[in-house]
Image (cartoon, rainbow over all chains, first blue to last red):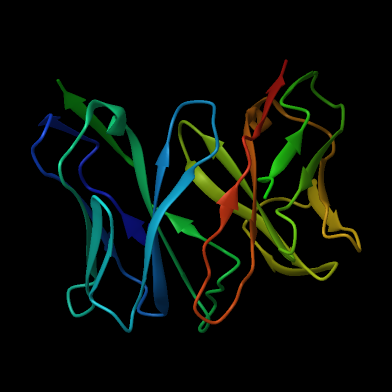
Length: 116
Length: 114
């Protein structure tokens, strides 16, 4: 039972354009969502997070949107840069109904490639 | 502030052996979580420790165990290693406050079981 899903295994974008990465979740007890960037054989690097009390959070080139009714979140990167090429994971946590803030449930990841 | 550190970075063991991995969290962080990453299963939660107590446990066999010390440093142990235990083991630390629940990851320990 995959509670967090990233349905696009890969995404290819031209430098300077927008990258949009998507994530869906099924567990309504999740109320805190995070995006991480990861290179092979390294630990994930935290990018941005959002609480369920918000529907948008921005940090520089990164914006996360949350649609609670659709159980969907997305990460927008504008403008995309070649250095953004990596695997992006969304993750979810909560504080009720078997979830915990200490336990992140990850999607399978999306490989982003930004071409110069 | 120093980040999360993990030792060793690489390990090679044979089936049946046991292994201990170490994690030092970011200063002031009291929650430490462990994850296993494999190509087939992705990133999966192993367990979380807070104030020396295991607070959450993932769906892994009893061969996987851990502990946390009073200085928040944590260790995980895998006994009777199997080939399928080959993976990147990641440790993450967090403040676990009301509005700040980000987990920050270390570089990982790459375990190879032969």
